Image 1 (tube, rainbow, N blue to C red):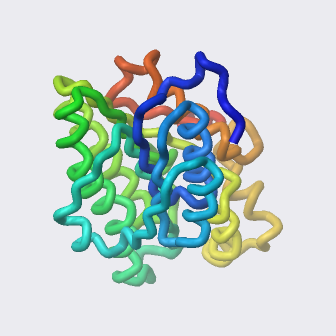
Image 2 (cartoon, one colour; image 1 turned 90 degrees about the vertical axis):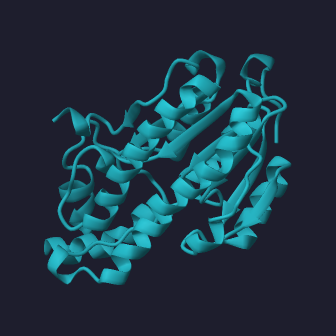
Amino acid sequence: MSSAPEERRTLDGRRALVTGGASGIGAACVRELAARGAHVTVADVDGDGAKALAEEVGGEAWVVDLSDTRALDDLSLDTDVLVNNAGIQRVSPIQDFVPDDFRLVQRIMLEAPFLLVRAALPGMYARGWGRVVNISSVHGLVASPFKSAYVAAKHGLEGLSKVTALEGGEHGVTSVCVNPGYVRTPLVEKQIAEQARVHGIPESEVMAKVMLAESAVKRLVEPHEVASLVGWLTGPDAAMVSGASWTVDGGWSAR
């Protein structure tokens, strides 16, 4: 990993943890925070991917299945920066939505972030400094059909982030959401077939008619663009940025 210019090393001596850190947005965030000087823990169910990236950035891997939320009840985390990024997607009309799929999405994308924030706050409070960055989505602010579980979880994450901001402010802890549109990641690529099925269109039309239909800028978001914002939000210029939701959606939510 190349060293960053001194002015970018805003996290020297800090520890960071990124969930879903082995690929996509998470991996980009891991590299960004490491370049800023943080010792980064790559948390992912993909053990090989987490270990490989941790080795690349000089961090460490935490192989964890965040759907097993009971195992997180008594967790204690020693981290200055927590990036809640791990997520999954299920696409289906409500009347056909598998109940256990709905529950799984809530566990990974709402219960687990709550438990990780709960585990990290005591240490952040003791040090008088902390940054919680929740990778939400434009779907944390608006809805789309066939995504009841994902939209519900992301809306819940928005509320959790705001409460964390209110409780953490007097302790030097900020909490924000970052809200991308469709990002060029494996999670998005896996949706194409499901989106084609529920919308009744060919897979070749999903990008234009579904994924980019609401965006003013007609392209996918790149992972490094999201990570760049995450890096800024953990830096000194963002000390008064808390309780907010930062869109990276090409104008989608302007409608």
